Length: 88
Image (cartoon, rainbow, N blue to C red):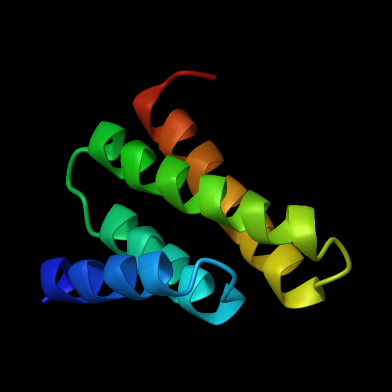
């Protein structure tokens, strides 16, 4: 389940705070949970968590093209939510 995966990755991130692999894994899970929300407002909360961590990775590794691409996808998800909600 996503809850179990989140718990595991959060623990790994605590134990290895400099591991972009674990942080990136956690962002992927957050993004997937956001995608699965029926209420788009709930989805936004998960995307925000994902974006925050992705930006943390990019602060240390600004030329990481995979992470930059992930951030772009996360921002598209946020824009789609806002469009669906009629916020824009």
